[in-house]
Amino acid sequence: MSNKKVLIATGGSGGHIIPALAIAKELKDENVTVEFIGAGGIFTHLVEKQGFVFHNIKAFKYNNRGIFGKIKALVFTYLSVIGALLQMRKIQPDFVLGMGSYASIATVFAARIMGVNCAIHEQNVKPGRTNKILMHFADKIFLSFEETKQFLGDKINAKNEIIVAGCPVEQKVLDAQSIERDEDGKFRILVLGGSQGARILSDVVPQALITLPEEIKKDLVVVQQTRPEDLNRVKDIYEEYNINCELETYFEDVPTKTRQTNLVIARSGAGTVCETAVLGRTAIFVPLLLADGHQMENARILTDKNASFILETGRFTPSNLAYEVLRLAENPEILKTMERNSKTAIDQSRTAAGTISKEILEDLKG
Image (cartoon, rainbow, N blue to C red):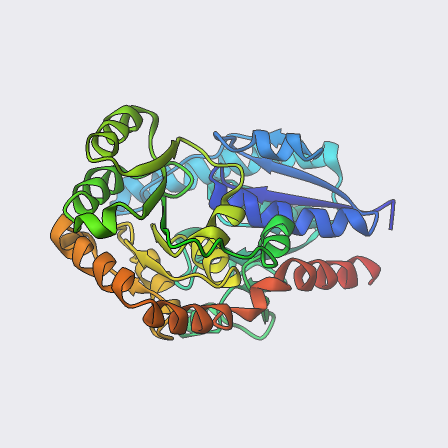
């Protein structure tokens, strides 16, 4: 299929780009040319670093509430579609995959105008605004979770082919499954704030850990991702209380660090939830408060299977977090049970990239 080309539309966040890259690599292995299109962002360099072309288009965020909001939405959508059409006439894709984001609206609409088959992938349990719209236009709808179907309602029609494929994870995540944790008496905590960091984790986690009993603190190893502006402040707290720590604004080797950890403390984007489960680790999730509540629904996928915990923002205090960490550190059998549950909770994500790639290949053959 060396003469076939797939165009993937993504947002600029790691939550869109990382699963998209996993799919792109599977297609590339089948000699399909894959290119990306989107409005750019701080993680688009990952696409080019992996050897894929990234095309920039204008994609407007909009609020469609009220008459003026609806008018603006129509105007911005029209302009975005025109931009996508101009790009796609040069690219000439044989198939379009939308991963969500405003750029996907323009690209999928342009694909429909050009008569190009298209699909969308919804990473989260609860579909976002973009994919709710695009479900009416896509030939195939790939879902990460079976539970998403309860939110589809009238979005499903006779033309839709709905496939619960899982949320694609990178090959390095799959490779990391074989890494054994160092059982040296240390209690390792990995703190992740999502692809762009989270101030609440920098504020709460250090203040919680410094209150732990000395016999626990002396064995703690904290590996924490922070925003650049938080790094020195957090580091000073850990050093003052002699807590062994490793702090960075971005970790290249998150899968390895996840396998080495006893406990993850993180936001609950779909990618983080699925990677945590694939790697068989337990997390305390702190869902980002968003209007649609999709991070809460993501976190429940594991908590409902006794594989992780949720501390909502209002309950995510130093005292509550310290209580949970101490309970887990003193009861390793609880963690072991939850790790076993986690490992089998989201099996389909291990094969998601391959599943989606095969479906696209079938379409290209047709």
